[in-house]
Amino acid sequence: ACIDWVRWDVESRAQYFHALLNAVHIYALPPTFLKRQLQSCPILSKANSCKDFLSKIFQDMALRKPLPPAPHRGTQLIYVAGGYKQHSLDSLEAFDPRKNVWIKLADMGSPCSGLGACVLFGLLYTVGGRNLSLQNNMESGSLSCYNPMTNQWTQLAPLNTPRNRVGVGVIDGSIYAVGGSHASTHHNSVE
Image (tube, rainbow, N blue to C red; front, side, top):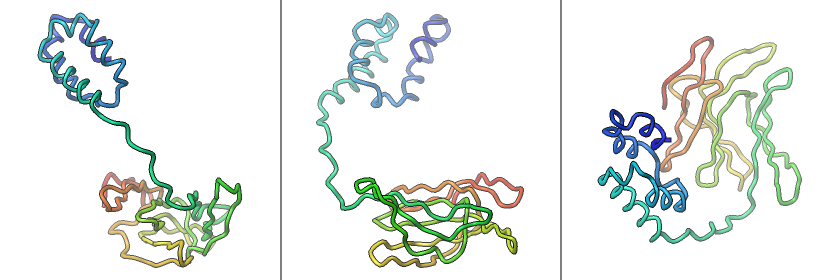
């Protein structure tokens, strides 16, 4: 795509080619594609700094050894926490794809739909959500931890901001709650 963009107006766009290449995750490209571009792209033959840049990446890729398969870490389960069926649910279930069975686990303690979840160091964490019932309609700032070894939940420090439909991710051993909503407010913050 970068080459096509430059090719459209080489005279004025060639100066941006190196910056474009720096913005692309080149290591995700197949080495065969990169090799073909290095051998036959007319724009690269005129842009030595770009060609050198891509050649170095290609050499790095050629020297890399494929990673061995990840070691087996026990039973792999797919968790389903909470949800909504005329009201928020407090259930936790797990699907074992190797046995093709659903397993009922300890309830979460409070009903919740729209929550985010992640696994960190073998523990399941649920974040935020909403308790929607006839008596209640309230966003949650809860952070709960499920331990599959004991089949028990632990409540942890709550979020600073209640978040429904929150995105959750793990980076370097930390859990991040991203976006979500509270009433009619849509969050663009992370905690």
